[in-house]
Length: 371
Image (tube, rainbow, N blue to C red; front, side):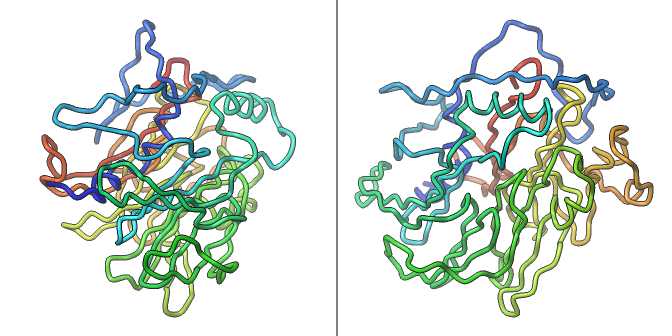
């Protein structure tokens, strides 16, 4: 019987996803670019306006629930959160939930930015950010949190979290912070200790994951723009996964060329790090596909010069040496499916499923038919 923590953790990206009303369409769907050898259509010439299509967020009606796979059930663990984006299940069973959302840093700079921001407002994904972490506690173990606490406030777009002993790490959009923590605490005090700075703006989420031996912390940092629109100097230190040595405090880029890696996980049989990546916009419904991939130390995965190996993006000034070394991802997940979070599920965790990576998908906003 799976533990409550493992079941909650397996749905790490679900809360953000269930705020979307999924609409069915009778329009014929193109085959999705999925798998280890996907069929990826040629890039469509970019027009003056991007393809945008997004449902309107409406929430869940009383008694309405997501459809679960056979043998599983789902219920509302907590309601009335304000744009919850990430969860961390603590050893005592408490669930920390980061509530944050995209805040435009000023007026739209292009037609694409204006259209994107207008579309995101429909889904309540853009606006004033709550900038807090809420703590949910289910004392009687019935799968519903009876207690709710303001765990941490006055942050800047908090997202990733990790607990190591008496230290609680928070990935804000501008910095990695460490707070003192005691078991069963319902609030973190102080402003925290800064371990490293991040450049804010653009893809703002900062995923966190401890190494298996707890000596290092890995952080995913997305790009500032779609395809290096403001030049590569503005993208320096972005579109990558960082490795932070918790003993020395030093950090380095572990792997690069990852446009927007959201979520990190360890695969136990090989000990390798994996992530899911949201790929670039503007060249087709299935071009290129988002992907799941192992992350090699020192690896480069193509962004912004190329995708799915050495397929060059003609919109980008090229670097032939980097294109030549670009690593092809392991598994395509379809175009613009917006995979946001993953975790390893051992055999037997969920009935009817073997071992493998569980992935939370948000779905599209930037293709002609919804994914």
